[in-house]
Image 1 (cartoon, rainbow, N blue to C red):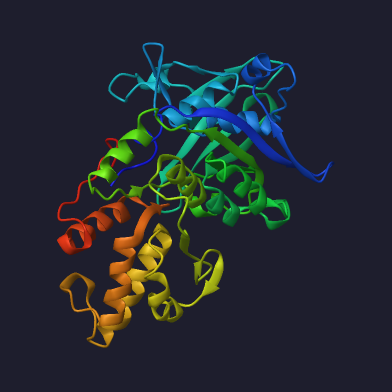
Image 2 (spheres, rainbow, N blue to C red; image 1 turned 135 degrees about the vertical axis):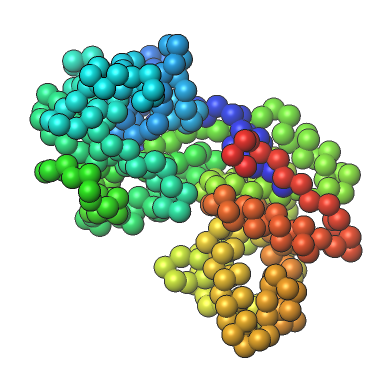
Length: 390
């Protein structure tokens, strides 16, 4: 089993563009950075003020000895904002910084200060961070735009997560189509959102801040395969090693990358299993769990499944809870009903790509693969490779 980003693909992502919906033209328009505009005279930098401020501030980057420390994606994003991080006493630890030297704004301690060319934007004070949470798939910052004397919450995260917390009138009708256009190309896609805050109150719950936001566009990165990945996947498969991709990225993006490197065959049917809006779906078509179980004979002939973390968790929880109550099934103690056990085995056997997987789901998958290892099914040892987090 292998993680995707930084393992199968290059560690460094390349900023591509921000795509946002313009009501004036009733369509999405792709907006590029100054750096991209310098390389291509046919495109123009058109970030809005809000977009520039979001990508400048919505991260956890630090500066140490004039070098950025933080997530490579965040660093690549920030470099395209035209903002600069101010290395001041607030950036130091509590042991390093004297309380008298810390910067405050309207009574709030400033966690980080950002400056920019006057023609591009106002200085930004970061007052609070809601760190990235895998359960909600997003992070946020509360900021003060000093020259405008205004406060905002800026949020970035998975498109599906941002979609849920935005005012529906700000979500374009072709949101899904535009997203699929990018993911079909194998791009890594995040979504941006914001809201003005009338009064900052740090006692408020995170969920109260991350609600009724305005959609601000898609943030698009290119994440190319490592040159050696395809050759190594072929070598492993030629030596009867089954290869699985286990990633937190979007299912369609992951599917595309898996096709490129040979984890998924182009000559066989690919079925994508998901769970959303309280419905199980296969290839986007809604169905209930019983229909999935009853279709085991059909699925048995399809050896390529792309499975989302939502499906993985909901299927196991649903069947374990349902059948445990009937004293018929307990996944962990191997007492599943024959039909459930069959479908469960098919998921583990034919699941080639596991996408939008949270860290604990990745761990559960590896444990289950190890628990159900069977030489007759083609494997007797399970390993996982990835970055330090994995």
